[in-house]
Image (cartoon, rainbow, N blue to C red; front, side, top):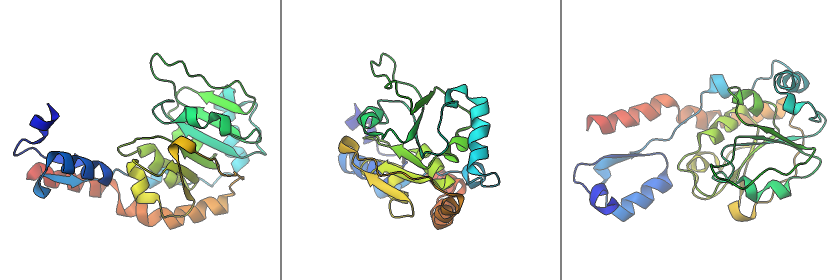
Length: 234
């Protein structure tokens, strides 16, 4: 069915990443005039570093809203994972999180999943939040060990916050944009080693952000929408 449908003469495509484009163009012989690559982005105003309050105050604000964090040790580094457990690779890293690291997991397992988080004092679970930007701004590292992600908007949002980012090297669209920038470390999905984590002071966070600003400005939502519009007009 895909071979028949995707090879229709005037069918157009907008791909979220280059690796997706390369795969489908090769498999379905899509002509250059019929597709574009339009990377998603992250709003700097929403997800940029918030350093007006110090780290302790930012953590304290979230502890007041989320009782699950009451036992979080503020003098230890914080590692953050966001997403559906299995699809985003959480089972591959849980046993590798060091005891001296606070590990915050935001998300749920897949429907019918048998995976559950270990019952450890340094693990903290939150099903859902509308304040994801605030969590990016307290974490000292964000980890995304997925084996396949057409783009990965949450990666760009974490990236915009200035935190350290540990992301799978292959088959993740966002990695194509951020892999050679400050504070980004590529990991092997199936044999992920979690680098040693230290508390990230606000100066380091801001330095990461300033070095990343070029990428964030080059791939903003205006440019993304312009690329979509070109395909729609055609």
